[in-house]
Length: 411
Ligand code: 17E
Ligand code: FE2
Image 1 (cartoon, rainbow, N blue to C red):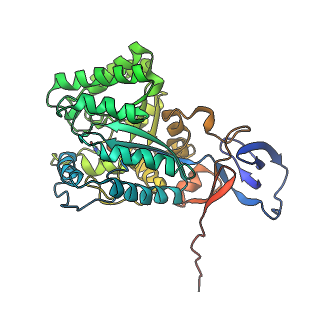
Image 2: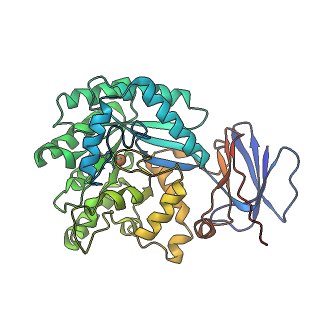
Image 3: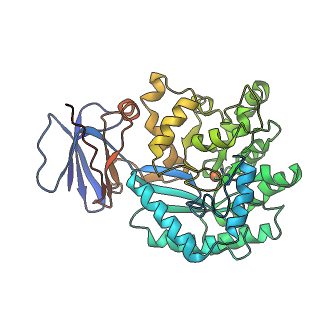
């Protein structure tokens, strides 16, 4: 199969992309628009990109909002309380059904790579066992990374350390953490040392829910970054949320950035989630409750956007569309300048792939997997301005999803 009349990010002109089975076989310049032959896909002067990435979602909790009760305060902490009630009702099949429904929503929006956190603060590890089956059963749709995520703490939850070790032994790909939720600062610090040891010993990646609070005293990011720096693990380590950084003063942040750069760790921000959950203890002026996305990016560090939730105790909306999160994030983070707009898709493609450590399994380049999207606009700027979408998703050289856009008729 070939894709003709394609625009590529960062390159001038039109391109012809030849797919050979499940690989990209050739990319050649096209002097002019051509008509597509039978069996080929016509990008019609629109972008062809590698699939969108969902680097941060909780597939074990999706589609549970209101069961048994709604989060009335809108805080992270009530979300954790409500989820603990729902968690008591979790079964193997319930988890698999909801996760697969959600994966279909992600696939409908051009996502083919997903990192999901799965709550392992459950003595039965029911959700984790279910998600390990889902990872196998949905391989034709997505590549799934599973994070062993200790929602109620590693040190503060009975048996927390053992549950983390068991989750990795059962097949989790990534070690998680939640230091700002541990009972004490010391426990937060020791939880990070524990999880970094576990990752180093087992070869897992690391992705920590880190400082997801407006509390400027929540300073576990420096601990995570220093552990990563000393062990030389930074490129394998991600700090998710880091919303407290939005409340740090500039003097501390300027010192912190030196360490962050040296550490080489990755960052994930979930802008729709954080604008909803944070700022809840403020009167006016009200904080936005996000990390310093633009500043992290400007400093040359790697940052990407995630959805976090779809209809769960933390966030009642969401439909799988990461472009919606990108648009919101660009607004919330003061990133509507031309320089940001024209490379905005980095935040849901290349930067995210780097965070997930996808390496040569990702990208529109000869020899890489034939996983591609045809988008509805010719460049990043127009994708955002027109609220564009993925029109076609190709996986292993075959069409996985095709969208027919709505038609407008003017009188
Ligand atoms: N758990 C958590 O600690 N933080 C979140 N944002 C979600 C779950 C969705
Ligand atoms: Fe999260």
